[in-house]
Structure formats: C-alpha cells, structure tokens
Image (cartoon, rainbow, N blue to C red; front, side, top):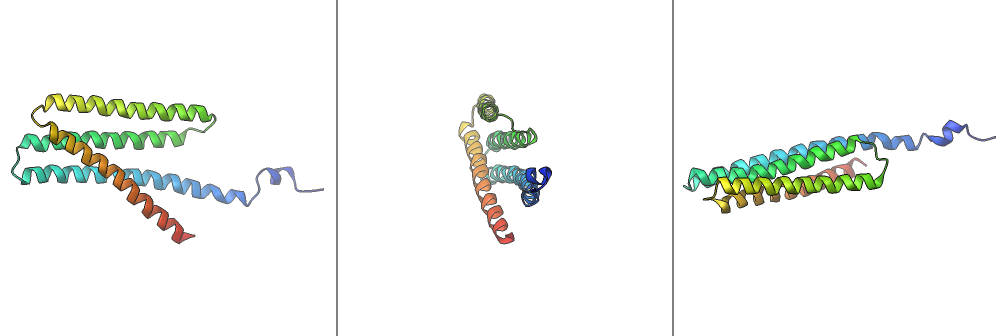
Amino acid sequence: MGKPLQECLTPRENAVIIPPLFLAEEQEKKSARQVIWLQVLVTLFAAGAVMAWGSSPQNAIAVLGGGGISILNGTLLAWRMSRATQRPVRDAHQQLRLMYFYAAERFLAVVVLLGLVLVVLKDSPLMVISGFVLGQAMLLAARLLLKNKTESGSQNVQ
C-alpha cells in the first residue's frame, strides 16, 4: 500500500536536524561564558587603568562595583537563557511571560544594586556609572563579535 506508519511520522531525512540543534545550544552556552569572562577582564583592566592614572583606590573600587553589576547582569542573562532551553516549549504565551519576567528581574536587580553601590560609594558616582556602562558595552560588543564569528564559522562548515 504505502510506507509504514512509523516511517511517515519520523522520516529519516528530518532526523538529521537534531544534532545541529544540540550543537547550537552548546555553542550558545560557550558564547555566554566567553562574554562573561570578557566583561570580567575589561572591568579589571578599567579598574587597573584608573589606579594607574593616579586616582584614588575608591575610584577603582567604584569602577569594579559598576562593572560587577554589569557582570552580574550578564551572568543572570546567561543563566536564564540556559534555564529556558531546558524546559520544553508547550505554550508560547507561557514562554513570552517568562521572558518578560526574566527581563523585569534583571532590570530590578540592576536598579537595586546600582542604588546600593551609589549609596555606599557616594563620592564616586561617575566611576560607578562608568564601570557599569563599560561592562554593558562589553556585553553588547562581545555578543555581536561572537555571533559574527560563530555565523562565519558555520558558513564555512556548510
């Protein structure tokens, strides 16, 4: 008559897409770790540069505080992204609600931590904000650079 029922449900040609999905997920986790480490290095370098210019140690600590908040934001983003991939997608509305919740969670964490650090280091608000902005800029730049690197590498494989 025709093909067996099992062959119609899961054609062998379509089973080839599963390993690349696992590879993409693993590459995303590796990329997230690389971004966080780049943020750490840039923050440490910026704090060292502040100290090298003869500024006070409090200014270097303020840069570390602002950069640390940015690193925490990147870490929270990577953690939530990895948690989202572990759950099966059953309801698109539930996924969207979770994404909004995770974004609000990160925003609230950043606002509260920036407020606390600015209160504690009240003499160096510009350095706190500078460290935070530098860390966030590194988050964006590293994501773009690593994405382009990954895309160009996957095109070479095909």
